[in-house]
Image (tube, each protein chain N blue to C red):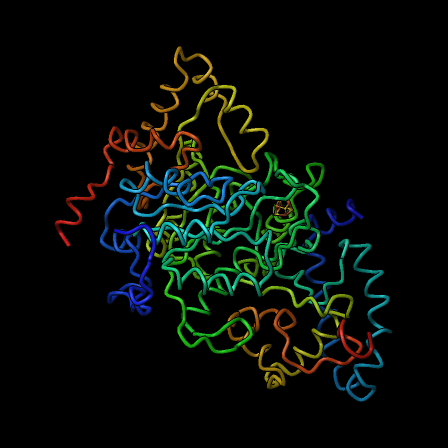
Amino acid sequence: MSLFWSDPNAIRPYEAPPPGHVAGSKLEIALRAGQFAVTAEMNPPDSADPADVFEAAKPLADVAHAINATDASGANCHMSSIGICALLTRMGHGTVYQISCRDRNRIAIQGDVLGAAAMGVKNVLCLTGDDVGAGDQPGAKPVFDLDSLTLIRTIRTMRDQGVFLSGRKITKPPKLFIGAAENPCVDPVEWRPERLAKKVEAGAEFIQTNYIFDMPRFEAFMARVRDLGLEKRVFILPGVGPLASGKAARWMRSNVPGIHIPDAVVERMEKAANPGDEGRRICVELIQQIREVKGVAGVHVMAYRREHLVADILREAGVARDERAENAQL
Amino acid sequence: MYRVRLFATRHSRAFEWIYQRLETVFVALDPLFRRLGYNRVERVVAVPERWVKSFLFDCKMCGQCVLSSTGMACPMNCPKQLRNGPCGGVRPGGYCEVKPQMRCVWTEAWEGASRMKHGERIAEVLPPVDRRLEGSSAWLRASREKARPEEAATDKARAALAQAFPRARVLEPSAAPLAEEPPRAVNRGEGS
Ligand code: SF4
């Protein structure tokens, strides 16, 4: 496959998704077929060179059904999610285009949704976004014109009704598999399942969660999710990732919004002779435990700066996808 | 005031009751308001409304009051102005990600809702705020919208929004208003 479309005729018309699918992304196809799906977050480059994007995506491309392109997560500036997605789709990779409500208003977002879809994006993840104060440019103006739920409903309206939020017609509506985030282990833990229900009501079709390090909390969350019958209405991909060291775990816990790591996990990291290996082992164990929880449809791996470990972690956990076997089936 | 607003969510059931009575009165007054002209009563109501609601709820006068669907906690006090539930950054103990000394508005809201008679309304997906309505009277808007819910929209964009959020339109009609706005209730254009 060539790196770029040199021939404009090679751009195919916007194709309809296969029957029974809303977008027909690899991720959607795998989930609807009942396969254990894997998504992985890519570390966005601070660079204008497309080669850096391909380099960062390389360890994830063959192991994930879709690569998440973050939208200035933690309010830190990097290459935009739409730019990354445009490059990755040219390579034929599945992407999850993350949209945060922090930096753009409803006009900009709806325009970008069409642009992303035209460039081959088939999955979106609707996020509120971390506060600007958490990032490298705390003096920026926070926008938050929409919130994650109104964003989900907006994209649903664009896709299913074929109109913008203003009612103006879209001649070719975007075909997108719509995702949302959840954070099962942080407060208010007792209301998190209800909030998930609200996201499903708004129109979310898959859920990627923040890091799960606390299995009892996650299991309690999932028990309530099953009581509400939500696991039948939405695909849930819990978030996991290898910790680098005890120090890093402590730092994340106190500096990155929305991360809950129980003391037992931090201590285990601190006591380990080789913290890197231990972090990896914990991640493998978590995937194995999460996989057994009823209602889980896959995992979302966020291995920040440890992307090279993802393939091994998935293999050790016994959830690696076999691209060749999948292609042979098609 | 922060303390008063915490008091309001702790006693959400009582405030819900008061608010419902108030709304009934305002809806009943719709014919009178219409005769006087909504534009003429707009400021007369908006000014005291601001005093009362800022004292009780730290109200920001978004003009699209949804307190009955948010456990009597004003969502505009959320630094991210979320209208549909907490963000993922809530700190341990239910404190705000952005202002760590403040209780997360949405933790309060959900607790408030759990004490209310119609607390289940918090599950409703509410539309984004119409920023043109900031500073206008939400009480009058509720009376306009609830007295004549079937009123056809004069504005296509508003009708589309109401259609995208159909349940919110039924339960909190002023969050997706359709009636024509009196000039003084709109931020931009004449009367502002
Ligand atoms: S923690 Fe609560 S109040 Fe603070 S920004 Fe998030 S949702 Fe809003």
